[in-house]
Length: 537
Image 1 (cartoon, rainbow, N blue to C red):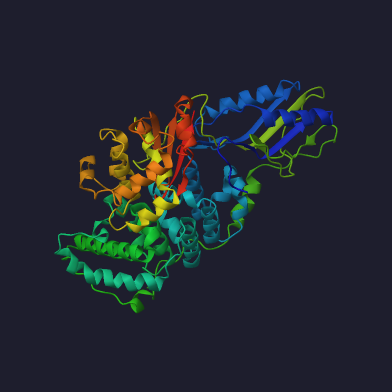
Image 2 (cartoon, rainbow, N blue to C red):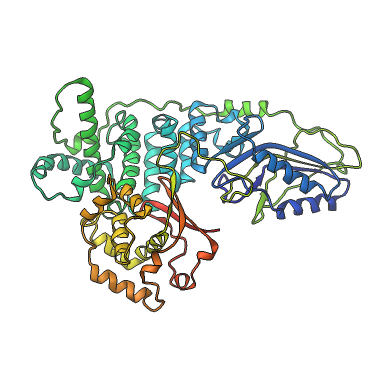
C-alpha cells in the first residue's frame, strides 16, 4: 500500500535489540503511542535511518529528539528528503520514473513494487491511486518541465484508462473518440456563424487562459486529437475550466475545448512562422479517429535493472544475531504513528550487552500540522499553490448547500446560464450580503478567469432565485443560520489546482452551523473540480 493518511508516521523497518521479549514489546507499544514531532503543513519527510541506545525507558525520548533534529534540517539526499506536499512528492517520483532513476533513490522504496513494470504501467498505477491530486501533480510536473515527458511516456491505452477512471470519479461516462470528433467538426463549422452575434453562449466564453495554454501546449502539439493522452489532457482542462458543464455535457465540452485548443495552437504556429493565420476547416469524424504518427513513449522497458541497483546501493544485510540479543518486531498499523516490517534486518553496530538499542530505517513523516517550525514552499511554486486570509470564510460553508441533491439538479438544469459553480457560490453569497472587498471574492474572480473582481458584476443573475431561496429557508430556516453572520468567519485559505483547505480556530465552531450540517468537510466536489476540506485548529 503506497497511500498514507495525513499526520502519519511510517516506520519501514524497526529493529529492537533487547535481552527480554517483553522489553522489546513494550518498546514497540511506546513508539506507537508516542507524540511524534510534526513535519509541517502538508510536508512529507523521509529519514533514512535513526539509531539510539541506552536504558529501555529512555530510548523513545532519545528517538523522538533525534527525529526532531532531522525534521529541522534541509534536504540531504544521503539521510533526509522532504517535499512540500504530496503532489510535489508524486511529481518528483514520476519524473524519476521517466528518467529510469527511481530505483536508485532510497526514499522511493515504498513505491518499489512499481519499478519492475513498464514505465507506462507504473505511471498509470501511481496516478490511479491519487486521481484527486492529478491537477496539482500536473502543475508540479510543468514547473519541473517534465509534464510532456511524463504524459508521452504513457501508452494510448493506459492514458485512456486513466481518463475513464477520472470521469468515473466525477460521476459521468467518458465520451468515445467518435462522439467528440463528430461534435469537434460542428463546433469549428459553427464558429463563424456565432462570431457576428452579440449573444455569447457558454461555448464562446470558454477561452483557456494563457497560463493554461502554456501548461498544456507542449503536450497537445505533439498529439493527435484521438490519442488517449490528448483526451486525458482535455478532461483535466475541462475539469479546471467548467466542471459543472463537464457533468452535464461532457462530449460537447470536450469537443469545444478540442476546437479551441486546435485554433490556438494553429494561431501560435502561424505567429511563429510569420504566415497569416489559417482559417480552421471542418474535419470529418472519419478523419479525426485515425491518429497521425506521434512520438513514441520515452521509455517502455521494465525498470528492474534500476530496482536491482537499489538493493546494491543500500548496504548489506545485518549479520545473523542471537535471538536473545536482537529481536525483529513486526509493528502493526495503529491509528496514530504506524510502523511497518518487511522481514529484513538493517545494518547497525553492536551495542554493549547491558544496553538496549533501537533502529528505524526509511521513516516517513507526512503531516498537516507543525509544532517546531515551518518550511516554505519552493521558490518555483506558482500562483496555483498559494493562500490568503479571509473574513468571509463562511462562504465556503455554502458549498455544502450546493452539494445537496436538489441544488445539484438545479445547477445542472441551468448550467448553460451560469456554467461555473464558482459563479453559483458568488451569487448565493450575495444573497447573504457578501463583503465584496474580501480576498475570497478576488479568488472567485481568479477561478472564473476574470482579471478583476469588478467583472463579477457582469455574471448572469442567480438562476431560479426564488426556488433557491425557498430551499435555503426549508433547510436552514429553523436553525436560524441563514443570516449574513453565517459568512463572517476569519480563516486562512490554502489552495492548489486540486484542493482548497480552510483553516479556522477551534473556537470558531458554531453549534447551529454544525447542526445544519454546513461545516462538515465537503470533500471531493466533482461539479467544482476540487477537494474542499475544513480544518479546525
